[in-house]
Image 1: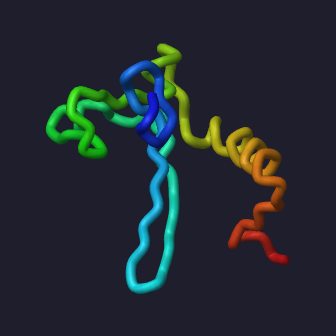
Image 2: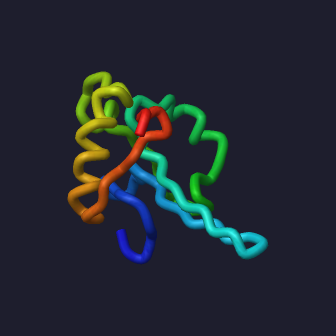
Length: 93
């Protein structure tokens, strides 16, 4: 929910999105919770947001959702939204 970044399901974060800048170097990334053990989040304040929770695709859908099941459709959608072509470091060319 605004003004928080990421992907949310109600008051629970499903996907964290971040940017880090240090010494003139910028890095970015995201963490999509597919089948994450959510009990670890009971010991911290995730993303420093008091009163907000964390969820996963597996929890929300009520069935195990493996990263391998989500990866290809996620990458396809990423390419479509950002109008780009992703190249894997494992690709020969």
